[in-house]
Image (cartoon, rainbow, N blue to C red):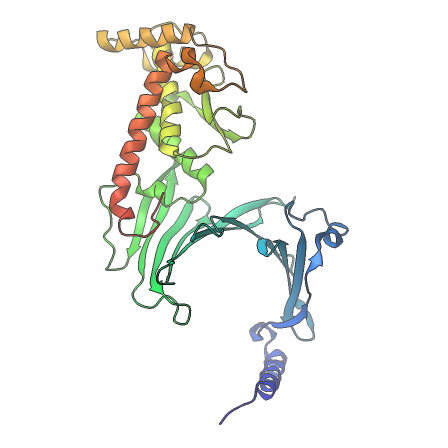
Length: 386
């Protein structure tokens, strides 16, 4: 028997009314209010929390009929036709913020990347902390019109991340993504900032890459978390743990620099706008930290970091190691002063300084190893893990 939509809707609401009277907790939410697109200036009159790039917004209210205790308002912010943020506000005071970042979606690019970052308030002041990140990557073949979808996600639970990558086979819009999908998931737990895999799940059509020591880092979507954990990993490998090296990521690093190591502060700093080739970048700066440890160990240190190096690691005994440390000391004495706006690729005093030569070698070697070991997992997924 065919049931017409209007009648079906009446039956649904009647059923919800009955459930609500018996047990309000089990009653489903229904749409109570819906707006059309509104100019963002109207929202700014009520709140200063609108995303900077938003030009319009809409809102819907869902809830349980005749019970204001069960209400949820969803405000969606747009830049043109694209969603840039969603704010979920419940009548019980709970708030969730989802940020949407889009790249690679234009007329000349058949790949589309969308990153969704979900945040919830972390304290009484209303500051938000990230608890979920999802990156959706799609590719549409111009020849066949078929679509490939790959989703990577991180569910953040304190000191743990539930991470996974899922790939759906090529499919047409009428029969989206049919066939067998590929899944590889891991549980990451952090020890001193370094991720370790403590649990796995995979479908039979995926081979777990046992020999990839960088696999835990590849599952981390957030670049800031990834470079911090890679830096801690390289610090540990270079036996620098005793020196308490701080890691800072900000937009105050010079625009012509992706990062630096400061022996006077005992700190590695990264430019938040230049987080790419992360194994190379972090390996380079950790190598500088190692160089200044060695300078301290031959008694040439002038900073607290270098003096601590001598105290905790003692004098260098080996002749070859000592000669290399002396080269570091001479290069440190002759290190050029750099301007924030100069093109460092043309500064030969900087390029040919021995500290920089050896740090570049170390960073490039680690990036090459990182990329080489990643081939095993990345040949199994269309986009892969970076």
